[in-house]
Image 1: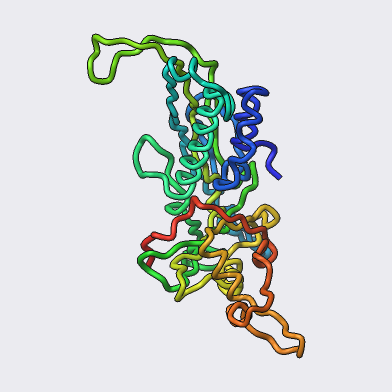
Image 2: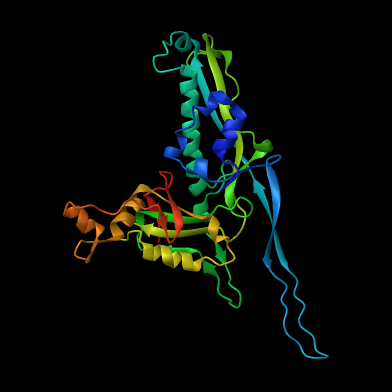
Length: 325
């Protein structure tokens, strides 16, 4: 299990007052509490990856073997500034009867929830600009197996195209897998609220007082190894997610990958397709698909918690409106 997540860092940086606000956040963006997050000094760092070993071989007396060095690749990993501004008019704070709780606390809770949604979406899709990390959808593992000149892509295509979705198998090893990087030594903070005079939005000459703070952090999505991200793409109702597809994808994962750290991420549509694709055993010993059991009003299989032996996480961050080939 990861030693820390974004959820943990937020708790550490905001103290007890924030802890109670964030317990429900993972319900719709589990990336926030599942994906490991590592504090980093500054806002960027370099990693070195070995992509090839020195080759050896057997030789006879008075003959040699070719000298082949290790092959190394250096990459720059960056973190980008995430900012969620909060402002509450002093009039509302003073008039708050606290029937629903403290208004400032409620506002902060909303910012935390939104940050989970934003960072969950970024984890998969990024936005391709310098203001946001590049998502895993664009960093699918590609590698060349030993004794082969043909590159392999860690992808299986279900067959759907427009308005389809994907299921991701991700290595979450905190040292060499996929994770969040949090810059400036892991600062993921909500500073204390401050009272400040503001200009009226339409007439700058008019003023009012408001309470203000923000939630901010330098965050990056880091794919440390080229063997970390695998995907089943093009999933839809005509081309559903099945255990057979999951097995076909796992076959592509090299044994060098630390397989005990792999986890699946799917959305609610894929969860339904997978559930309905699995078979059940009738009392007479025959098998039937779950969809037939639903139609007959009988019990169906429980919601999936694993595929090919690896945990399944259901998230709203993965869209069903992808365009796949």
